[in-house]
Amino acid sequence: MNIVVCIKQVPNTNEVKLDPVTGTLIREGVPSIINPDDKAGLEAALRLKDSIGAHVTVLSMGPAQADAALREALAMGADEAILVSDRAFGGADTWATSTTIAAAIKNLDYDLIITGRQAIDGDTAQVGPQISEHLGIPNISYAEDIQVEGDSVIVKRQYEDRYHTVKAKMPCLITALSEMNKPRYMTPGGIFDAYREKEVKVWGLKDITVDQANIGLKGSPTRVFQTFTKSLKAAGTVVQLDPEESANYMIEKLKEKFII
Ligand SMILES: Cc1cc2nc3c(=O)[nH]c(=O)nc-3n(C[C@H](O)[C@H](O)[C@H](O)COP(=O)(O)OP(=O)(O)OC[C@H]3O[C@@H](n4cnc5c(N)ncnc54)[C@H](O)[C@@H]3O)c2cc1C
Image 1 (cartoon, protein in one colour):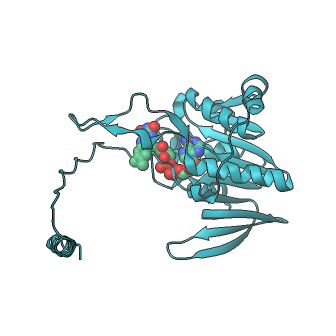
Image 2 (tube, rainbow, N blue to C red):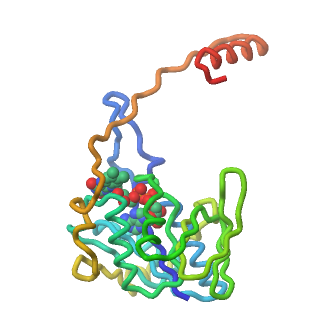
Image 3 (cartoon, rainbow, N blue to C red):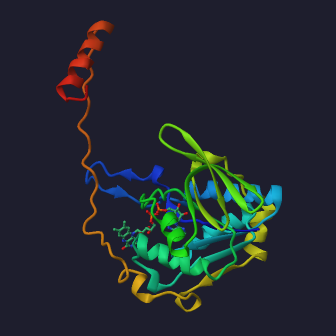
């Protein structure tokens, strides 16, 4: 069984702070990590590899530094790593990103494709379902558990107030939630192998078959017109009242703002 896991290298947004004077984001020194949903997807693929046997390929589209994310995935136990990287792919919105990734996946054998539900930087949750559309395969999103039975996957899919158990024939694309599992650590031997023995293949424009009208900035139907930081919230008020008065005070404040 062949599993392709799409991983995106993202800035660790938990560590991005606001400059209190300028109100802008402080990005310096913010470490890059594998997007959390993607790491859970990778762990799910590695557990399938452990239990029923699978060849796990990790694929990332991004600049040269995304190599580190792919080597981390190799050190966790992935078998093969592909970096889809070319100036022509830069400035892509979700349409151009998913077109490029789907074109790269067409070069591979796959039964199952796993992406994260959402990347913590772009936050759109569009790329996974778009890849499945490009490839013409079913998509099950919001996965909290993935089992394989014969030629099908059985997925526990999260909704706001319930779960559904969904079965689909492979090939199929699943988008994973970080709640699904606790990803394993890299092993020391795995790290050595990832840097000394294993290769991260780099595929550029010449290595994939794709309509150039649908890639990169030029092939992106959407453009970011402006980005800005949200204004800082005003300081709160501290009141010293007895418990009953405090409760009434809070209720009045919530009513004033039409929250209740
Ligand atoms: C309007 C708009 C304009 C943009 N313009 C630019 C731009 O000019 N320059 C720029 O750099 N970015 C730009 N972006 C960001 C870029 O589109 C996104 O980073 C990219 O499309 C992925 O979308 P996302 O982060 O929302 O991922 P999501 O859709 O939230 O990701 C879902 C899953 O898809 C997979 N995935 C997503 N991206 C990748 C990847 N690169 N490699 C492997 N797997 C992946 C992961 O498994 C991820 O968990 C733009 C985004 C928008 C919405």
